[in-house]
Length: 473
Image (tube, rainbow, N blue to C red; front, side, top):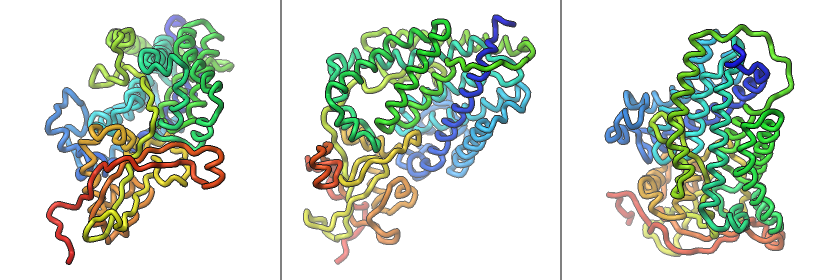
Protein backbone atom coordinates (compact mmCIF):
# COMPACT_ATOMS: atom_id res chain seq x y z
CA UNK A 1 0.00 0.00 0.00
CA UNK A 2 2.35 2.68 -1.23
CA UNK A 3 -0.41 5.29 -1.05
CA UNK A 4 -0.92 4.68 2.69
CA UNK A 5 2.64 4.57 4.05
CA UNK A 6 5.86 6.59 3.79
CA UNK A 7 8.66 4.09 4.35
CA UNK A 8 11.40 6.72 4.01
CA UNK A 9 10.16 8.30 7.27
CA UNK A 10 10.78 5.22 9.43
CA UNK A 11 13.78 6.84 11.17
CA UNK A 12 11.82 10.09 11.61
CA UNK A 13 9.11 8.07 13.35
CA UNK A 14 11.65 6.37 15.59
CA UNK A 15 13.25 9.68 16.66
CA UNK A 16 9.84 11.27 17.17
CA UNK A 17 8.53 8.41 19.30
CA UNK A 18 11.55 8.24 21.57
CA UNK A 19 11.60 12.02 22.03
CA UNK A 20 7.85 12.07 22.78
CA UNK A 21 8.32 9.32 25.37
CA UNK A 22 10.96 11.50 27.07
CA UNK A 23 8.50 14.42 27.28
CA UNK A 24 5.84 12.09 28.68
CA UNK A 25 8.34 10.94 31.32
CA UNK A 26 9.00 14.53 32.43
CA UNK A 27 5.26 15.28 32.54
CA UNK A 28 4.45 12.27 34.72
CA UNK A 29 7.44 12.92 36.97
CA UNK A 30 6.24 16.49 37.48
CA UNK A 31 2.79 15.19 38.42
CA UNK A 32 4.12 12.52 40.78
CA UNK A 33 6.36 14.89 42.72
CA UNK A 34 3.96 17.84 43.08
CA UNK A 35 0.37 16.59 43.17
CA UNK A 36 -0.13 16.17 46.93
CA UNK A 37 0.25 19.87 47.72
CA UNK A 38 -1.56 21.06 44.58
CA UNK A 39 -4.53 18.74 43.96
CA UNK A 40 -4.21 16.02 46.59
CA UNK A 41 -6.74 15.34 49.31
CA UNK A 42 -5.25 18.19 51.37
CA UNK A 43 -4.07 20.13 48.36
CA UNK A 44 -4.81 23.73 47.51
CA UNK A 45 -7.41 22.61 44.92
CA UNK A 46 -8.36 19.05 45.95
CA UNK A 47 -9.47 16.61 43.30
CA UNK A 48 -12.33 15.16 45.44
CA UNK A 49 -13.90 18.61 45.73
CA UNK A 50 -13.54 19.14 41.96
CA UNK A 51 -15.17 15.86 40.90
CA UNK A 52 -18.14 16.55 43.18
CA UNK A 53 -19.18 19.48 40.98
CA UNK A 54 -17.84 18.47 37.53
CA UNK A 55 -19.27 15.48 35.70
CA UNK A 56 -17.37 12.68 33.98
CA UNK A 57 -18.78 13.84 30.65
CA UNK A 58 -17.22 17.28 31.04
CA UNK A 59 -13.91 16.01 32.41
CA UNK A 60 -13.38 12.28 31.70
CA UNK A 61 -10.83 10.88 34.12
CA UNK A 62 -10.04 7.76 36.09
CA UNK A 63 -10.23 9.95 39.18
CA UNK A 64 -13.90 10.61 38.54
CA UNK A 65 -14.40 6.94 39.40
CA UNK A 66 -12.10 6.83 42.40
CA UNK A 67 -9.64 9.16 44.06
CA UNK A 68 -7.09 8.78 46.80
CA UNK A 69 -3.59 10.18 47.02
CA UNK A 70 -2.24 6.65 46.87
CA UNK A 71 -4.20 5.88 43.70
CA UNK A 72 -3.02 9.11 42.05
CA UNK A 73 0.58 8.30 42.96
CA UNK A 74 0.21 4.81 41.45
CA UNK A 75 -1.14 6.30 38.21
CA UNK A 76 1.58 8.97 38.00
CA UNK A 77 4.43 6.56 38.67
CA UNK A 78 2.87 4.01 36.30
CA UNK A 79 2.94 6.75 33.68
CA UNK A 80 6.64 7.25 34.41
CA UNK A 81 7.27 3.53 34.03
CA UNK A 82 5.38 3.20 30.74
CA UNK A 83 7.07 6.32 29.37
CA UNK A 84 10.48 4.91 30.28
CA UNK A 85 9.54 1.63 28.58
CA UNK A 86 8.54 3.50 25.41
CA UNK A 87 11.75 5.50 25.58
CA UNK A 88 13.64 2.21 25.70
CA UNK A 89 11.74 0.93 22.64
CA UNK A 90 9.44 -1.67 24.19
CA UNK A 91 6.71 -0.86 21.65
CA UNK A 92 9.00 -2.14 18.88
CA UNK A 93 9.15 -5.56 20.54
CA UNK A 94 5.37 -5.95 20.59
CA UNK A 95 2.95 -6.80 17.80
CA UNK A 96 1.39 -3.80 16.09
CA UNK A 97 -1.79 -3.87 18.17
CA UNK A 98 0.25 -4.28 21.36
CA UNK A 99 2.44 -1.27 20.54
CA UNK A 100 -0.66 0.83 19.90
CA UNK A 101 -2.17 -0.17 23.23
CA UNK A 102 1.09 0.63 25.00
CA UNK A 103 1.07 4.16 23.52
CA UNK A 104 -2.57 4.52 24.55
CA UNK A 105 -1.73 4.00 28.24
CA UNK A 106 0.25 7.24 28.89
CA UNK A 107 -2.29 9.23 26.90
CA UNK A 108 -5.20 7.91 28.99
CA UNK A 109 -3.32 8.38 32.27
CA UNK A 110 -2.21 11.91 31.46
CA UNK A 111 -5.68 12.84 30.22
CA UNK A 112 -7.01 11.69 33.59
CA UNK A 113 -4.54 13.97 35.37
CA UNK A 114 -5.10 17.04 33.19
CA UNK A 115 -8.88 16.80 33.40
CA UNK A 116 -8.82 17.08 37.20
CA UNK A 117 -5.75 19.34 37.43
CA UNK A 118 -7.77 22.57 37.31
CA UNK A 119 -5.72 25.79 37.36
CA UNK A 120 -2.47 23.93 37.85
CA UNK A 121 -2.95 22.13 34.51
CA UNK A 122 -4.45 24.96 32.47
CA UNK A 123 -1.39 25.52 30.28
CA UNK A 124 -1.34 25.00 26.53
CA UNK A 125 1.45 22.45 26.62
CA UNK A 126 -0.79 20.03 28.56
CA UNK A 127 -3.31 19.89 25.68
CA UNK A 128 -0.48 19.84 23.16
CA UNK A 129 1.08 16.78 24.77
CA UNK A 130 -2.31 15.04 24.77
CA UNK A 131 -3.06 15.90 21.14
CA UNK A 132 0.36 14.72 19.98
CA UNK A 133 0.24 11.69 22.27
CA UNK A 134 -3.10 10.59 20.84
CA UNK A 135 -1.73 10.69 17.28
CA UNK A 136 1.34 8.74 18.37
CA UNK A 137 -0.94 5.78 19.15
CA UNK A 138 -1.60 5.35 15.42
CA UNK A 139 1.92 5.90 14.11
CA UNK A 140 2.73 2.19 14.26
CA UNK A 141 5.92 0.32 15.12
CA UNK A 142 8.55 -1.75 13.28
CA UNK A 143 5.88 -4.04 11.81
CA UNK A 144 4.57 -1.34 9.46
CA UNK A 145 5.87 1.71 7.65
CA UNK A 146 4.73 5.10 9.03
CA UNK A 147 1.21 6.03 7.82
CA UNK A 148 1.36 9.06 5.56
CA UNK A 149 -1.89 10.50 6.92
CA UNK A 150 -0.60 10.47 10.52
CA UNK A 151 2.61 12.22 9.47
CA UNK A 152 0.45 14.83 7.73
CA UNK A 153 -1.68 15.32 10.86
CA UNK A 154 1.45 15.82 12.98
CA UNK A 155 2.51 18.59 10.61
CA UNK A 156 -1.01 19.99 10.85
CA UNK A 157 -0.59 20.26 14.63
CA UNK A 158 2.80 21.94 14.20
CA UNK A 159 1.28 24.37 11.70
CA UNK A 160 -1.49 25.33 14.14
CA UNK A 161 0.97 25.72 17.02
CA UNK A 162 3.27 28.05 15.10
CA UNK A 163 0.82 29.91 12.86
CA UNK A 164 -1.70 30.33 15.67
CA UNK A 165 1.00 31.75 17.95
CA UNK A 166 2.10 34.13 15.21
CA UNK A 167 -1.44 35.37 14.59
CA UNK A 168 -2.17 35.95 18.28
CA UNK A 169 0.93 38.15 18.47
CA UNK A 170 0.08 40.21 15.41
CA UNK A 171 -3.50 40.69 16.64
CA UNK A 172 -2.48 41.36 20.21
CA UNK A 173 0.07 43.67 21.76
CA UNK A 174 1.23 46.44 19.44
CA UNK A 175 4.82 45.87 20.53
CA UNK A 176 4.86 42.75 18.33
CA UNK A 177 4.01 44.86 15.31
CA UNK A 178 6.54 47.50 16.35
CA UNK A 179 9.20 44.79 16.94
CA UNK A 180 9.77 46.04 20.50
CA UNK A 181 8.30 43.25 22.67
CA UNK A 182 11.68 41.71 23.47
CA UNK A 183 12.78 44.97 25.04
CA UNK A 184 10.65 43.73 27.97
CA UNK A 185 9.84 40.05 27.54
CA UNK A 186 13.12 38.52 28.76
CA UNK A 187 12.72 40.49 32.00
CA UNK A 188 8.98 40.01 32.54
CA UNK A 189 8.46 36.41 31.32
CA UNK A 190 6.92 34.01 33.88
CA UNK A 191 10.11 32.25 34.94
CA UNK A 192 13.48 33.51 33.66
CA UNK A 193 16.37 31.13 33.09
CA UNK A 194 20.08 31.50 33.81
CA UNK A 195 20.71 33.25 30.48
CA UNK A 196 17.64 35.51 30.48
CA UNK A 197 19.55 38.41 32.06
CA UNK A 198 22.05 38.30 29.19
CA UNK A 199 19.30 38.03 26.57
CA UNK A 200 17.65 41.11 28.06
CA UNK A 201 20.86 43.08 27.73
CA UNK A 202 21.39 42.28 24.06
CA UNK A 203 21.47 45.40 21.87
CA UNK A 204 18.00 46.67 21.03
CA UNK A 205 18.55 46.35 17.28
CA UNK A 206 19.17 42.65 17.87
CA UNK A 207 15.87 42.45 19.77
CA UNK A 208 14.18 43.81 16.65
CA UNK A 209 15.85 41.07 14.61
CA UNK A 210 14.66 38.45 17.12
CA UNK A 211 11.03 39.59 16.81
CA UNK A 212 11.18 39.80 13.01
CA UNK A 213 12.70 36.32 12.84
CA UNK A 214 9.95 35.06 15.14
CA UNK A 215 7.26 36.49 12.85
CA UNK A 216 8.89 34.89 9.82
CA UNK A 217 9.17 31.50 11.53
CA UNK A 218 5.60 31.53 12.78
CA UNK A 219 3.72 33.23 9.95
CA UNK A 220 5.61 32.19 6.80
CA UNK A 221 7.65 29.06 7.46
CA UNK A 222 4.70 26.85 8.61
CA UNK A 223 3.29 26.76 5.07
CA UNK A 224 6.53 25.17 3.88
CA UNK A 225 5.82 22.13 6.08
CA UNK A 226 3.45 20.90 3.38
CA UNK A 227 5.94 21.44 0.54
CA UNK A 228 7.94 18.56 -1.01
CA UNK A 229 11.25 17.51 0.49
CA UNK A 230 13.79 18.86 1.23
CA UNK A 231 11.78 22.08 1.72
CA UNK A 232 9.69 20.58 4.53
CA UNK A 233 12.81 19.38 6.33
CA UNK A 234 14.37 22.83 6.04
CA UNK A 235 11.23 24.44 7.46
CA UNK A 236 11.18 22.00 10.38
CA UNK A 237 14.88 22.56 11.02
CA UNK A 238 14.36 26.32 11.18
CA UNK A 239 11.57 25.82 13.70
CA UNK A 240 13.83 23.59 15.80
CA UNK A 241 16.56 26.25 15.83
CA UNK A 242 14.01 28.88 16.89
CA UNK A 243 12.71 26.67 19.68
CA UNK A 244 16.22 25.98 20.96
CA UNK A 245 16.77 29.75 21.09
CA UNK A 246 13.66 29.98 23.29
CA UNK A 247 14.95 27.12 25.46
CA UNK A 248 18.08 29.14 26.14
CA UNK A 249 16.20 32.34 26.92
CA UNK A 250 13.74 31.11 29.56
CA UNK A 251 11.89 28.34 31.38
CA UNK A 252 8.78 27.39 29.39
CA UNK A 253 8.18 23.91 30.77
CA UNK A 254 8.13 21.40 27.88
CA UNK A 255 6.39 23.75 25.42
CA UNK A 256 9.54 24.25 23.35
CA UNK A 257 10.53 20.60 23.60
CA UNK A 258 7.19 19.18 22.47
CA UNK A 259 7.30 21.64 19.54
CA UNK A 260 10.77 20.33 18.68
CA UNK A 261 9.44 16.78 18.90
CA UNK A 262 6.68 17.69 16.45
CA UNK A 263 9.19 19.26 14.07
CA UNK A 264 11.31 16.11 14.16
CA UNK A 265 8.41 14.19 12.63
CA UNK A 266 8.68 16.40 9.52
CA UNK A 267 12.42 15.87 9.11
CA UNK A 268 13.37 13.14 6.65
CA UNK A 269 16.54 11.59 7.98
CA UNK A 270 18.78 9.97 5.35
CA UNK A 271 18.58 6.23 6.01
CA UNK A 272 17.66 3.08 4.11
CA UNK A 273 14.20 1.93 5.23
CA UNK A 274 13.83 -1.69 6.36
CA UNK A 275 11.66 -4.14 4.47
CA UNK A 276 8.24 -4.41 6.12
CA UNK A 277 5.00 -6.07 4.98
CA UNK A 278 1.99 -4.08 3.86
CA UNK A 279 -0.13 -2.58 6.61
CA UNK A 280 -2.96 -4.92 7.69
CA UNK A 281 -6.43 -3.90 6.60
CA UNK A 282 -7.74 -3.38 10.14
CA UNK A 283 -4.91 -0.94 10.81
CA UNK A 284 -5.61 1.02 7.61
CA UNK A 285 -9.29 1.31 8.51
CA UNK A 286 -8.58 2.45 12.09
CA UNK A 287 -6.02 5.06 11.01
CA UNK A 288 -8.23 6.49 8.27
CA UNK A 289 -11.24 6.64 10.61
CA UNK A 290 -9.21 8.52 13.21
CA UNK A 291 -7.90 10.88 10.53
CA UNK A 292 -11.43 11.69 9.37
CA UNK A 293 -12.47 12.33 12.99
CA UNK A 294 -9.54 14.68 13.65
CA UNK A 295 -10.01 16.58 10.40
CA UNK A 296 -13.65 17.12 11.29
CA UNK A 297 -12.75 18.29 14.80
CA UNK A 298 -10.27 20.76 13.30
CA UNK A 299 -13.13 23.02 12.25
CA UNK A 300 -13.30 24.81 15.61
CA UNK A 301 -9.53 25.51 15.91
CA UNK A 302 -9.41 26.78 12.33
CA UNK A 303 -12.45 28.97 12.91
CA UNK A 304 -10.79 30.35 16.03
CA UNK A 305 -7.47 30.88 14.24
CA UNK A 306 -9.01 33.02 11.48
CA UNK A 307 -11.24 34.94 13.88
CA UNK A 308 -10.37 38.48 14.90
CA UNK A 309 -11.32 37.49 18.45
CA UNK A 310 -8.85 34.59 18.45
CA UNK A 311 -8.26 32.99 21.86
CA UNK A 312 -5.19 31.14 23.06
CA UNK A 313 -4.80 27.65 24.51
CA UNK A 314 -8.30 26.26 24.45
CA UNK A 315 -9.58 22.70 24.11
CA UNK A 316 -12.74 22.17 22.08
CA UNK A 317 -13.46 18.66 23.34
CA UNK A 318 -12.98 16.96 26.74
CA UNK A 319 -10.47 14.48 25.29
CA UNK A 320 -8.17 17.30 24.07
CA UNK A 321 -7.99 15.71 20.63
CA UNK A 322 -7.77 18.99 18.68
CA UNK A 323 -6.93 22.29 20.38
CA UNK A 324 -5.89 25.86 19.74
CA UNK A 325 -2.58 27.26 20.90
CA UNK A 326 -0.70 30.52 21.33
CA UNK A 327 1.29 32.44 23.91
CA UNK A 328 2.18 35.99 24.92
CA UNK A 329 -0.44 37.81 22.91
CA UNK A 330 0.40 40.62 25.31
CA UNK A 331 3.73 41.31 26.99
CA UNK A 332 4.11 42.92 30.43
CA UNK A 333 6.29 46.02 30.59
CA UNK A 334 6.93 45.75 34.33
CA UNK A 335 7.69 42.69 36.45
CA UNK A 336 5.94 42.23 39.78
CA UNK A 337 6.61 39.47 42.28
CA UNK A 338 4.70 38.36 45.35
CA UNK A 339 7.14 37.87 48.23
CA UNK A 340 5.80 35.61 51.00
CA UNK A 341 7.18 36.03 54.52
CA UNK A 342 6.53 34.58 57.95
CA UNK A 343 7.29 35.55 61.52
CA UNK A 344 7.35 33.70 64.80
CA UNK A 345 6.59 36.87 66.75
CA UNK A 346 3.39 36.87 68.81
CA UNK A 347 2.38 40.30 67.53
CA UNK A 348 3.13 41.10 63.89
CA UNK A 349 4.72 44.51 63.49
CA UNK A 350 6.57 46.22 60.68
CA UNK A 351 9.84 45.67 62.59
CA UNK A 352 9.12 42.02 63.43
CA UNK A 353 11.52 39.27 62.38
CA UNK A 354 9.97 38.63 58.97
CA UNK A 355 11.65 35.77 57.13
CA UNK A 356 11.22 35.20 53.40
CA UNK A 357 10.17 31.90 51.85
CA UNK A 358 12.36 30.98 48.88
CA UNK A 359 10.76 29.47 45.79
CA UNK A 360 12.65 27.15 43.46
CA UNK A 361 12.28 29.02 40.21
CA UNK A 362 10.54 32.35 40.56
CA UNK A 363 12.66 35.41 41.43
CA UNK A 364 13.08 36.10 45.14
CA UNK A 365 16.43 37.05 46.65
CA UNK A 366 17.88 39.65 44.22
CA UNK A 367 21.29 37.97 44.50
CA UNK A 368 20.08 34.50 43.60
CA UNK A 369 20.62 33.76 39.92
CA UNK A 370 17.78 31.96 38.10
CA UNK A 371 18.25 28.28 37.33
CA UNK A 372 17.24 26.15 34.37
CA UNK A 373 14.30 23.89 35.23
CA UNK A 374 12.53 23.34 31.91
CA UNK A 375 11.34 20.94 30.66
CA UNK A 376 10.43 20.18 34.29
CA UNK A 377 7.43 22.32 35.22
CA UNK A 378 7.34 24.19 38.54
CA UNK A 379 3.60 24.71 38.67
CA UNK A 380 3.40 26.79 41.85
CA UNK A 381 6.15 29.14 40.64
CA UNK A 382 4.31 29.71 37.36
CA UNK A 383 1.03 30.46 39.12
CA UNK A 384 2.81 32.88 41.46
CA UNK A 385 3.68 34.93 38.35
CA UNK A 386 -0.02 35.16 37.53
CA UNK A 387 -0.79 35.99 41.17
CA UNK A 388 1.51 39.00 40.92
CA UNK A 389 -0.38 40.24 37.85
CA UNK A 390 -3.65 40.23 39.77
CA UNK A 391 -4.95 38.67 43.02
CA UNK A 392 -7.91 37.45 40.95
CA UNK A 393 -5.69 34.78 39.37
CA UNK A 394 -4.83 33.41 42.81
CA UNK A 395 -8.20 33.70 44.49
CA UNK A 396 -8.94 29.97 44.42
CA UNK A 397 -5.69 28.75 45.95
CA UNK A 398 -3.55 31.48 47.55
CA UNK A 399 -5.42 31.47 50.86
CA UNK A 400 -4.91 27.72 51.19
CA UNK A 401 -1.22 28.12 50.37
CA UNK A 402 -0.88 30.56 53.28
CA UNK A 403 -2.78 28.19 55.56
CA UNK A 404 -0.45 25.32 54.66
CA UNK A 405 2.60 27.50 55.33
CA UNK A 406 1.19 28.36 58.76
CA UNK A 407 0.91 24.63 59.40
CA UNK A 408 4.42 23.90 58.09
CA UNK A 409 2.75 21.38 55.80
CA UNK A 410 5.45 19.01 54.59
CA UNK A 411 4.09 18.48 51.08
CA UNK A 412 3.68 22.21 50.47
CA UNK A 413 7.16 23.01 51.76
CA UNK A 414 8.58 20.44 49.32
CA UNK A 415 7.46 22.71 46.49
CA UNK A 416 9.72 25.46 47.83
CA UNK A 417 13.47 25.86 47.73
CA UNK A 418 13.70 26.70 51.42
CA UNK A 419 11.46 27.42 54.38
CA UNK A 420 12.88 29.85 56.97
CA UNK A 421 11.23 27.93 59.84
CA UNK A 422 12.18 24.58 61.44
CA UNK A 423 9.75 21.69 60.82
CA UNK A 424 8.52 21.71 64.42
CA UNK A 425 8.26 25.51 64.76
CA UNK A 426 5.79 26.92 62.20
CA UNK A 427 5.36 30.68 61.85
CA UNK A 428 2.75 32.52 63.88
CA UNK A 429 1.89 34.84 61.01
CA UNK A 430 2.38 34.86 57.26
CA UNK A 431 2.12 37.90 55.01
CA UNK A 432 2.66 38.67 51.34
CA UNK A 433 4.04 41.84 49.79
CA UNK A 434 4.21 42.97 46.18
CA UNK A 435 7.54 44.13 44.76
CA UNK A 436 8.58 45.51 41.41
CA UNK A 437 11.59 43.64 40.01
CA UNK A 438 13.94 44.82 37.29
CA UNK A 439 17.20 43.44 35.96
CA UNK A 440 20.29 45.21 37.17
CA UNK A 441 22.65 46.81 34.70
CA UNK A 442 26.13 45.51 33.94
CA UNK A 443 27.57 48.09 36.34
CA UNK A 444 25.11 47.23 39.13
CA UNK A 445 25.85 43.52 38.67
CA UNK A 446 29.59 44.12 39.07
CA UNK A 447 29.12 46.35 42.11
CA UNK A 448 26.47 44.40 44.01
CA UNK A 449 26.54 40.87 42.59
CA UNK A 450 22.74 41.06 42.30
CA UNK A 451 20.95 40.26 39.06
CA UNK A 452 17.70 41.83 40.29
CA UNK A 453 16.79 45.13 41.92
CA UNK A 454 13.47 45.19 43.70
CA UNK A 455 11.25 47.97 45.05
CA UNK A 456 8.37 47.60 47.48
CA UNK A 457 5.00 48.43 45.89
CA UNK A 458 2.24 47.56 48.35
CA UNK A 459 0.89 45.01 50.77
CA UNK A 460 -0.54 41.98 48.98
CA UNK A 461 -1.86 40.06 52.01
CA UNK A 462 -1.84 41.46 55.56
CA UNK A 463 -0.31 39.38 58.37
CA UNK A 464 -2.51 36.29 58.69
CA UNK A 465 -2.66 33.51 61.25
CA UNK A 466 -4.57 30.26 61.52
CA UNK A 467 -8.19 30.65 62.55
CA UNK A 468 -8.64 29.85 66.21
CA UNK A 469 -4.96 30.25 67.10
CA UNK A 470 -4.26 32.08 70.35
CA UNK A 471 -1.51 34.59 70.92
CA UNK A 472 1.09 33.58 73.45
CA UNK A 473 1.32 35.81 76.50
